[in-house]
Length: 247
Image 1 (tube, rainbow, N blue to C red):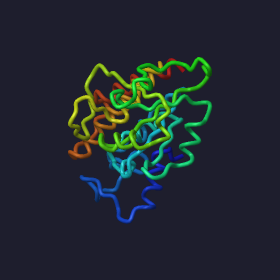
Image 2 (cartoon, rainbow, N blue to C red):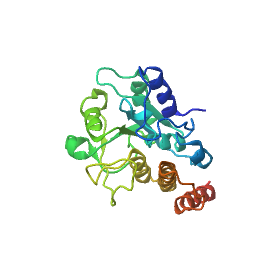
Image 3 (cartoon, rainbow, N blue to C red):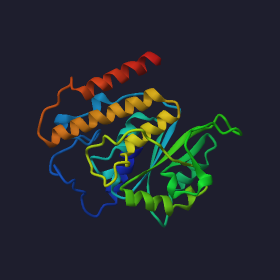
């Protein structure tokens, strides 16, 4: 069954006035399940790790169309992943309903320096008044300038706590360039959030899945075959074994 990001991509394509062309390999057919070349398909390696946390992706206009988008990986693994296109002048009623759902405790994941101090938190803690609420991490998926615009021009996010991450490492993402070393791709941010929520196995699995996706993507770009025993594949297998042992 298509997940939230693939559904958003399909919806975005129906409203496109011209086809979206990736920078490289735009004329090559791609797998509908993982967006890679069929020769480098990733679908058989999709991890299944149950999580208590949920993910809500607010995606900039063409982000769902990019083959390098890593929000897709989150939706592959985290069952409760929701995806919405962002627009400054309108908001999807389904997004407002999700944020108001009492089962969730939403957190906007964004650097604390851009929020009022009273909104900023650095940990994921149960609400004393409603301890059963599950964390819902709202990830702003786009370029840095797009993410800042989403954060500043979305009134429905203004009353929510802002989870400011404090990673102890630099980003390992290699498919897009960033001007700042402290910028992480969306999948890496999601893994950091899962770790803060105490879901360390899911966090490690998502990071391993990103490594494998990156490896397959770059091998396809360089017209090189995939080695199923690469370090990235071994790491993902080890994460899957750990998850299975804890199930």
